[in-house]
Length: 101
Image (cartoon, rainbow, N blue to C red; front, side, top):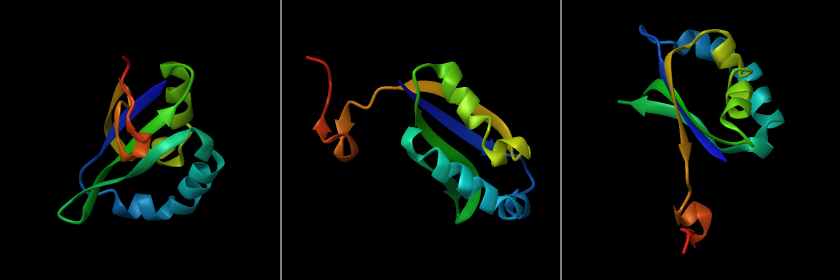
């Protein structure tokens, strides 16, 4: 199951907090790479304003447990997190079309 997390940073900017925890965050990413389909910062006018993750897990709860172990979550960078399941049916990342017939 794919689970998408749209994480919006608190304001004012969380850049200092992100930089302080970047090493731990990247270590977390590397140790969980098998479950991360795609992840990265969300930007607006070159300013980081949040994070986007698509995680692969057996259940939504297991995906949440994984995200909630990210150092960025643990240091309370995000004001909100929108969680949705996701079906990867088309695009270059899934090899073209992948919808059910």
